[in-house]
Image: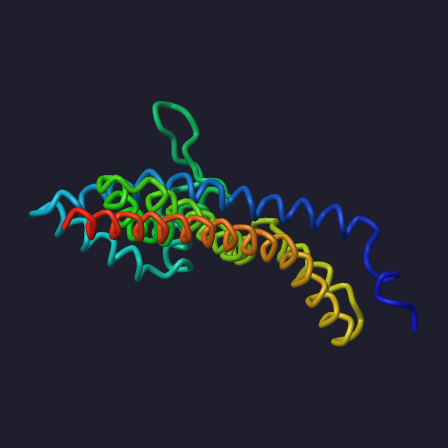
Length: 222
């Protein structure tokens, strides 16, 4: 039997890397829109009153929104021949998937943003900066979640693997290919998680030392 590498199409790796780039593109759009919406919701939560209640309800709704349901709603809600001021307005597949991930992104950022804003207003910049590793962690989750685009024909990384798997003759070969895909996705994602974990631990130690110094100062004053 020929090794699996010989049975893969010659353009598999370039196509797969291009598909992974689409996964990251989707995640960038989703995190950018989620940041804008999530921070507005976080500010509304801190404002109190009716605004806080409305923001909390919106966050809860977005947190519970299934990505596939949102994706297929967007896919069918905007006609492919829709126009705005005479210009085409139909959502591309990439934009449809990205917007379907915005509810998760915005809800996560709103939850993290509330604490970050409290830390900032309390004079703790390192505490507020702990928000950044949380956002990056959400970004990598969005990269993994962007594979939902395969369901509507978006040519992202998983789509390339599924197309290649259809050309392989045995289940064993397909399983090996899926394992290769997991590794190829896992390397950059795990590296990103490791870097963000390191940064978060560093910021956490800075916040802890700052807290200890403030407590010691309070004790001396008393």
